[in-house]
Length: 421
Image (cartoon, rainbow, N blue to C red; front, side, top):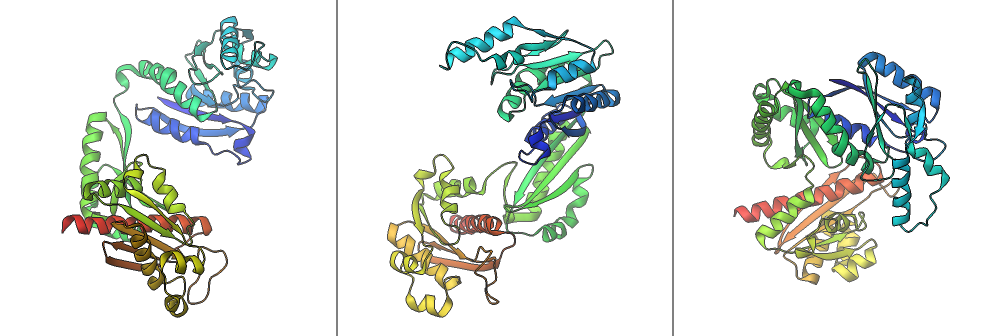
């Protein structure tokens, strides 16, 4: 089955909202053997919506839309699609009453706003896709030629819920026994290794990936490796992908920290749990970003004690014990300062392990000796110090994010060395 996706909303065309719905639907549909062959975004204008849907139906006969099902004047998806099918609109009293009860149950009063009546207007001959996650019902509209349009809400949480509850089972049923060839992917996550070095490292094992595609996806967290199997059964795809992922992990070694959507923070916390250790941080240029990433993970309080944001030299000296001579001789952005920051915060809070970050995030503050992006990280594990300096790329936000990822990776590697000794 080939499907076209039409995402609707002026906010998409203006760039204020990213099309996360399209990405989610592409992944979910591929897993059952359905391909989105074209994605189109269109604004909140009735004739434009109708034209795009009509063209998509002529090509594939199967369309999913997201957006434009709300109660306001710019929500025009249903009447626009109804016009393509030559259908009129009717008021569904059942939907209207459900909307009224939902309004009352939320304590917003007893009178449903007149604007909500629009959400109860349904094209003749349409089937309802029940929305258990919001107010706007979804619509399935099909003609005598078996061409169909499924209309889903634009709010991502509602769209995903309704797709899983209503549309996915309907498409599985429609596919029947033909749903044997699927598109499935596996992701191997790496950090601390460049895209080009990864490519060289994996060159000798390319033959072991025969029949699978491999994509390199670099970002601030590292380089993700995406393996994809197409045109095979789910079972065969899983077996091939598992085998290929194992080959990649073996070839790359310690630069692999996880799979799929794994976060490096979780990998570090798991090692802290295994080692029975506590962690503290000392941050300068990242201003608490590392601590924020750690505390975003439930259960981190078992291993993470806290830290110090030492943005100024005065705080580095008074709260972390960085020596005046160190700051004068080497400067705030130096391995020497990073090492004293790590040792100082570990001693202050009596932790097993500490990590520090100091650098020039930019866009100002760089010098010829220490340009923007210069970052130093140090790790103190029970008195054993390691440190390094790197030149990180990107704008201020990227440098700060890359700094936290690098710091976490240094902690991970220090723990691995300790656990294996």
